[in-house]
Length: 173
Image (cartoon, rainbow, N blue to C red):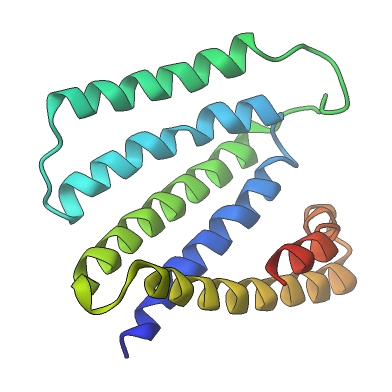
């Protein structure tokens, strides 16, 4: 029962990772990085409301500075041109980024809750291993489903995700 509680964040992290690749089909990498950095802000808000923890003014300022730093680094630190020049489709890309921001932030908060709720009964490496076990299982299923859908539909976005299959399996193994 307790181990099963780790399945939800594993599923959310998998969705977060795969939605990131999907967003890259519709937006330039620096656009995805800037919009994706809102995950920092969303995680802080969820931390406050779901875990009922106070966030000090200094912590909010730190979050704002971190977010601003990511935006500045992405805007001014990247050269134009290169292999990632695509026609951006904000109508699809922005909602996809919003989905991965919310799912990733939720997973972060859920893991924080699990790690606090486990207390001293489970050492940190054990809690981490529980999350990893579900992460491997969920990602193996996702890789299989994406591969099957890619073969059946020929959709470009799924084909791009499917191209990562070997690397995902190597990383998971």
